[in-house]
Image (tube, rainbow, N blue to C red; front, top):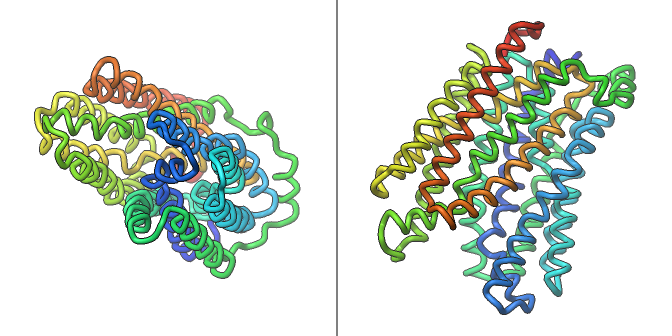
Length: 409
């Protein structure tokens, strides 16, 4: 059976991938609130140095993950998607556990680099779900997976803070390793993958970037992924500062900021599957265009929000609008590329997302520090508006050329 028609086990695999992604993302984000504490435990005393080393250690994982995502995607095309998820979950479980044994910050950064090199479970799960789900259900399935990933982003930091309070920082890292090992067991025992014909495996082995049809359209979609991740992640580092600005006090600002973060993520969780289902029915790029247009207006209004209540409501509404962006882009790419190169191209898409994920906070931090936090939301609105223009251009180009057999994006 061709992957275009979907695996007979796609629903089961979606559940396993969603649970595994929730578990691994919870484990990865669990360390966020305790990373500065761990850096301090490793002998760094200066406040500025603690902040710098925490940022370096945090970003290190994304660096190696971005560099290796296309390789893992290509190997998944060749050797199977399940093997890549098993590799990622076991590798991450070992690497995260070893971090708890670090003796200095250099070892911490090196092991964070190793975690990115060996990991990538959620991106691998995205490739597996995109490849094995019937194309007419792909955006809905990816929306479900995206909601599970976002839920992990919410639960992880809460668990991390609780573990650090109840035990110690090193114990939290061992707990992360154990949590991700559970995802490894579930993936190894429950995921079902139909072995592909040898002819398809040989084609996947030989495929190169220049052999993929419609490269200009795919490049535009990869650029769109980077823009959208840039827009999605940019405001996060300055939310706390902006909340303090709105309230005029630093009293309870951490709690208020956490609520704002949660509201935005909750909107994404709620809308992801629904927007994916709608995109499967009416067209992926059509839904993406409307979602980005709505997000542009909402982000611009956030720059003008006069109080915390209106700002929080706008963040929730923005989460609703942006819930389907990753599923619709991935589903569009899936429709355009042949089965033998799905993993390779979606691996490049993961790298493009990491470019936006790393550059967004850097630019936002610089602008927020010099021009004020409202400027960050205005900049993010400009980014989503650019995304609207790129989406319209891609849709027009596809309309002028060939449409995928299973429907138009």
